[in-house]
Amino acid sequence: MFAKHAATAIKRTQPSTLRRFTKAHHPAAAVINAHTPDSSLSSAAWTNPDPGSEFTVSSKSGFLPRRDPLPVLPSYFEKLDEILHEMPILKSDGTLGLLHTGQLGARVERELPQYDVEFVFDKRILAALYRDYSMLASAYLLEPCDIQFRLTRNYGLGRRMLPANIAVPLQTVARRLGQKPCLEHSTFTFYNYQRKDHDQPISLSNIEPIRKFSGCDKEHNFVVGHVAAARHTDAVIDASLGILEAVQSNKRVEFNAALRQYSTAMGRVNEILAQTLQGCGDYASFRTFLNGSKAQSMFNRGVLFERNGDTEAHKYLGVGQSSSPIASLGTHLFQLSQLSPRGSLPCNDGVDLLRAPNVRSFLEHVDQQARNLGVQSYALRSSESSAEYVLALGQVLTYRYRQWANLRDSVPVQSARDNAAFHAYLDVQTSHVRDIAKLVSRTHASMDGESLGQSVRTRAESVVHHAEMVHRSLGRILNDAEPTPLPVSMIAY
Image 1 (cartoon, one colour):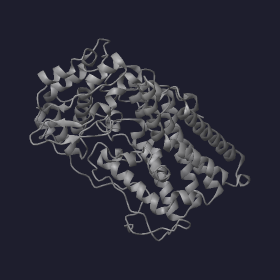
Image 2 (tube, one colour; image 1 turned 90 degrees about the vertical axis):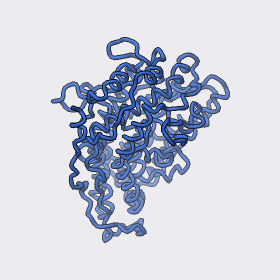
Image 3 (cartoon, one colour; image 1 turned 135 degrees about the horizontal axis):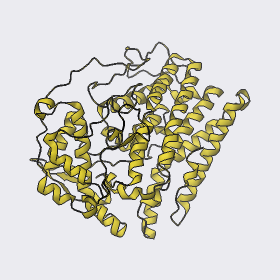
Image 4 (tube, helix red, strand yellow; image 1 turned 180 degrees about the vertical axis):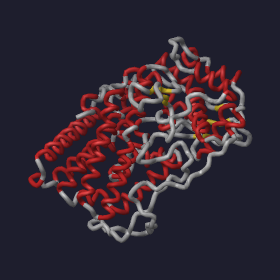
């Protein structure tokens, strides 16, 4: 019986420290000399605070879960599994699902039991329930908006009340996992895949989404692309820790090598995303369900959860590529948040607060260490380091810019007023991308190019050329009176 299986508690193992870092405590008030890192101040060790969680951060699995996600719920949750299978606009067998006909809400209200999840202790099952309930909550709340959008290209209003048969178990599971009761990036992507052949590694051809909203090819590519790209985040994390350690130890050669490792790993991430996220196409067919309940016209007063004594209006951000932990890591590691204090960044918008505890803890650690050690200023003290820093920033820029390519095609712009509002939105959302582009150009201008090898100099110049094109393109689009797609051709270089 499922109850017996689910009640099996996971034994906690001793926290494993990620490589390189010592266990000495770094005084919070210590100010590290920006020009000469103090090697006597050893950086604080970081461990996964919840090692039994499916989401641990390591140089083995990167940002992916430590085990493949659970694709099918235990039989106790049979009706929930059934509704999720029937939910997509286009189902796997080619027939039309509940979201296409607008019958999801009625089906949930009529047939879905309010499952008791208090007795579930298996972390893998809890993670699967969190994925499934958060996706069902998003689909239920935004179903009217999707129907309205398909008819008029406007969203209208979403449902204000999340019924107890979703709200209660979702809040319970979220609390047990240390997360918020909403759909977040890693849940929709990194914990939403299954392998076709379990004996083969994760690749674009060997994985497929577990749960879907629209069932279209672009949704498949969005999930599969992010998962396949995240397979390389083990090297990104390893390089990030290597960068911090090298600065802390004042080892210039190791620092440059770690920057190269970061650029190479992020290059693989961007290459995979370039294959799978070319243009938005029918991105609009599932984008509706990725909207959050915070700062959105469809939820101007937030969302109420039907639960005894709960009168709070819940407001959470939605899912976008900018909300990926990969984007946050680059921002924190290279101290880029100070470029755009008012820009749309996961650390500024509060997206980082929605992540799993281990991921949140890791990003906070990197942010604190990068600030204390002065990673950016250390890179700029050497021409070779500056060049490697420019190459690493180029990969961050590529990743961040891809989010906005062809954004116009997925945002309803029907009038001059809509267009003006969109320009204001785009100005805030892309300010960080434009600021990174300017930083790349400034850093390159301050380098002593003559002291560099021809290969490094040529690659750095290519990155600067790309950054300048990105900055000019975004500037032109912001000044255009008519909607213009962002040029996808400038994403890869």
